[in-house]
Amino acid sequence: MSSLIVVHYGEIGTKGANRPVFEKFLEHGVRRSLRGLESPRVFKLDQRLFVNLDERDASEAMKRLSEVFGVVWYARVEKASLSYPEILETCLSVLGARQRGDSFRVSARRSDKSFPMGSQDLAKKLGEDIIDALGLTVDLHNPGVTVYVDVLRDRALVYTERVRGLAGLPVGVSGRVLHLLSGGIDSPVAAWLMMKRGCRPTYLHFYLAPTSQAVLQSKMVDLIRTLERFGGDSDLVLIPFAPYQLATTDLPSEFEPVVFRRFMRMVAERLAQRLGCSAISTGDNLAQVASQTLQNIVCIDSGSSVPTLRPLLGYDKDEIVRLSRLVGTYEVSLKEYKDCCAIISRHPRTRMKVQYVDEASAGFGFEELAEKCISMGDMVTMADGRVSVKPLSELLEKAGAGIEQHVTSSSRLR
Ligand code: ATP
Ligand code: MG
Image (cartoon, rainbow, N blue to C red; front, side, top):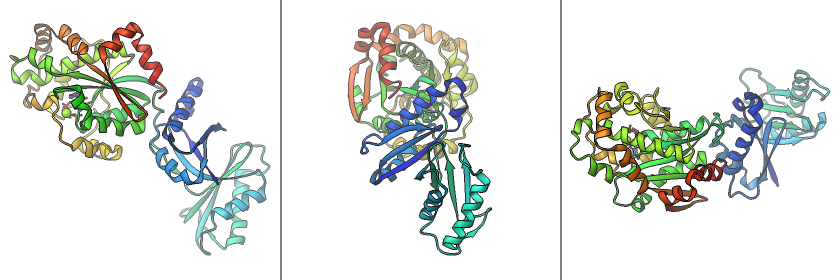
């Protein structure tokens, strides 16, 4: 037996000429989420997506659709032909388990006006016939169950439960960002919010561990795997912290956090341009910690030619924690992991001056240092559950300016 699920999208329906592109990304996101299930069929009809699949996979599919951005709501539906008796029969069958006296209401919508009955007339007549057949009572305001009837061009859909989706925009439709991912609570949530607005993240992580292989044994991979449930296969760039650490040993500790963040931003900026990312994103939150005061953020961004987006700027810490539980990264973020920031002073100046950070950046030769770190970096590809690592330089050299193409073509629609 097969089951049918209808998937509704709201916001993307309003994007005019871009609509087909949005629909394509959404359809891709839905297909991706259903990977591994027994040949689900996904198709578009009457401004909805449909998923047709084996009944045994239906509850798993319903669970996975809850993690697809761009889906406003979805429902398991029964299908009826466009004849009143068959629509009524289907309503009676979905209500079969209700007891005499239970309350209900009918909500009918006629998207295709060629059906001879109007929405109100259809709902009224179905209501009367359901009362006659099953002895239920109507309650329009607080019903025990609502029977939805959607009349489309070639079929009617009958169902009793709408499940809210994540809404937002399909991942990839807004383009690509280079997302600075640490092992903390905030940056995975920030990545999720970027995905919610249609961005596909390539992750960038600066590591303290002796080798990039050691990072692959850490929670960083678990964090990305969790985020992949929403965004699909991901690339992770790993950059060693050691060259920076060696070059800046005589930096006064109170300057460390802001100067290091300026350095991360400079590396990210260079990589973003080469990897085809239009912007950088981070888990910064205004004034949550001393390095994130407005003045310090100004110092970090000063001189940048690539915008840095900070989707958590308006959130309180408890809101971020709540979101991270929802995303599923909270427990992973709490796991032991020695990040670079762990060895950087926790007591920075709260009001650094741009001039000082500029001087430190020039004095320590950040431009060359950034290139050196990039040359020692690795590109980790996580596709179809497999992890593969290649020196970043190999990729950058091989493709030259074409690296952008390599990354975007292979992973924009993934
Ligand atoms: P998080 O919980 O994500 O670690 P946080 O509140 O601890 O955030 P910071 O440690 O000050 O904040 O870092 C601010 C942002 O800088 C992080 O959200 C992340 O985007 C970036 N960042 C920090 N450390 C690293 C790192 N090792 N590699 C890449 N990005 C980092
Ligand atoms: Mg942190």
